[in-house]
Image (tube, rainbow, N blue to C red; front, side, top):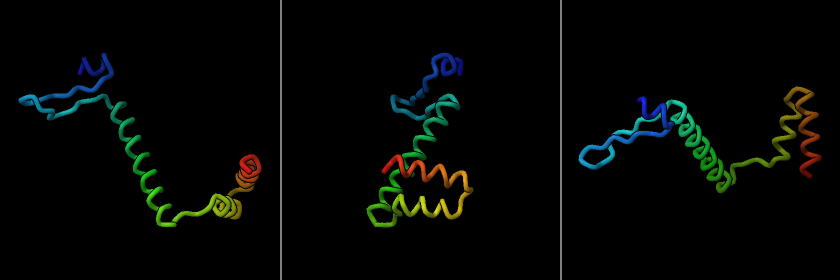
Length: 84
């Protein structure tokens, strides 16, 4: 554990030359977990888009404008004007 804390790098434990266990700092683990979640979300979104299950940006902004707080709505209109 001292080595992991000192170097910030993961430690791979082997049995007969094969990796068996990886030990890592909790912050490093959280970063890996966050990246996996992000990649999975992107893959899910791309798959849905390929199946035609998405919504246009204009539809999403219109929906938010109807249902969100007025200040958020104003910010979205500004963002929409900038992106156009």
